[in-house]
Structure formats: C-alpha cells, structure tokens
Image (cartoon, rainbow, N blue to C red; front, top):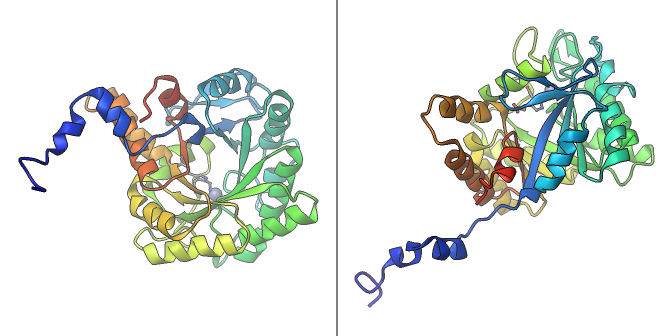
Length: 325
Ligand code: PBG
Ligand code: ZN
C-alpha cells in the first residue's frame, strides 16, 4: 500500500497554492548582496559594458542606488573601487581618499545598509596581480601588510565587514590582527575562502581594469578540481578568525557549497560571478532563455545548496521584479 496507484506525488504539485505552501527552499531579498563599483573619476554613473544593467558610481553619488537597494530589502552592498593610481605595492588600495573609503563614509552618513568592502590589490597594482609581484610570482608574505592596511583603512571609513579576496595564505589572520590592533574589534571578516582560478571573472576584470598584465592567477587562486583542498582553505580561514566564509564561483562549484554547508556551522556565502551573470544576460538578449525563470532557478540552486548569503549582480532586479523563490 506504499506505492502507486495509492501514492501519487503529483498530488502535491497540482496548484500554484499547493506548490507555494510546500516549497522547500525560499529566498528573502535580505540574503542577497549587490556588488557595486565606485570610481573616483566620475561625477555621474557610467554604464559598465561587460556587466549589463550595472554602472560605475561616483563615491558620493550612491544615493539613488541605495534608495532602490533599501526599498527592495536587499541584505547589503559589496564595494569594489577603481583606482586613482597604480603602483607596484598597490598603495592606492589603502588611500583614505580612494574611492572605497570615500564611498563608505558617504554611505555611513546616509544609510544603515550593510557595508562590505572587498580587500584586494589587483585593481591597484601595475602588474594587475592580487598582491606584490616578484621574480617567483606573487610574494605571499610581502602582500600581507598591504592587505592589512587596506582592511584597517576600510574599517576606519565605516565598513561593517571587510572581504579579503587575494587568496594569499595568512590574509585573514593578518587582517584580524591589524583590525584588533587598531581598535576595530567589531569589524567582521567575510573571507573569500574557497576561491578558484576561474574563467568566470572576465567581465569583472573588464569593469575593474584588474586583469593581470602577465601570467595568470593559478599560483594563488585554487584549482577548481580540488574539493578536499577547498575544505582545508575554509577551515584555515575559520581558524584565522573569519566570521563568514565564501565559495566562489557559484554554479560551477555547487558541490563545494553543499559540502561546506554540511561540514561547517559558520555563515556561508557564495559569489555568483560576473561571468555567470553574463551567460544569462547574453542568452536572454538573444531570446534563448527566459531571464526571470533562469535567474530564479539559479538563485534557488545556490540557496538550496546551502548559501546563507548570495552575492549576485542579479540582486536588485530579482528582488524588485519578484524573481525569487
Ligand atoms: C578581486 C576579485 C575578483 C572578483 C572578486 N574580487 C577578480 C579576480 O579575482 O580575478 C571576481 C568577481 C566576479 O567575477 O564577479 N580579487
Ligand atoms: Zn585580486
């Protein structure tokens, strides 16, 4: 008496009301984080060709965007800065007059939205790598002080969380120590913990002007073939004091997200990257995909696999146009 014809699973799919009542995965907009690019050279927003629907914003001109983000109920903003100068050490990253600190101060004065600042040197170094470039490739330990100074500069300007994305060993520990040393014990760390050397960052690097001048990032970002190593990266960041850990990119690494969810009780974020966004946008533009349904399905998958927070370029549109499960 347990199988067909008595058991009929379709009975629970019969109407939209039944389906809504029984949906196992839902996604309030408060779990979505919007990436935002700020550029000190601008006095009005400028569209980003490689990320359709997105703009580079003047640091003090985020008001209209924040209004939309707040009324859509999004969880927060993740800030990326365009540099006003580039040098070998990436000193523009920690300049208190740089785009990110200026934006943070302006946001702090006008809104209570969660402010997250990406911490990396790739947009600020002449070599376009995520730290100090030497004869042997990325110089791990020489990169740590710059990342730590950057994190402190962003904390001072009002970041709630700093988000180190350079994938150098010890970055979370170095940043935690510097923050605590500077009295910023309440500033959190969202660690890009399991971040792979991925083909899906291309549109972002166009937007940021942060593509490496020579070589690639495989000497520091992870090999996407290594799930066990990914768990070690997450463990290491938690041991160094990360408050929230991240898997990046998203869809190509859903299994890592789900493994991390099963293994760690810390808050877990996923980055649905610029290249993943580009695939949807390009296909939708050609009429090959229905965008609303595709975005809903992707965000559902990321949430179902275990993400507490989803960083996505679709955040605002998905929340405003009710594309969420
Ligand atoms: C900087 C950084 C990158 C992304 C987030 N922070 C690029 C990279 O590592 O090359 C990618 C984000 C995206 O593609 O949306 N280290
Ligand atoms: Zn970087």
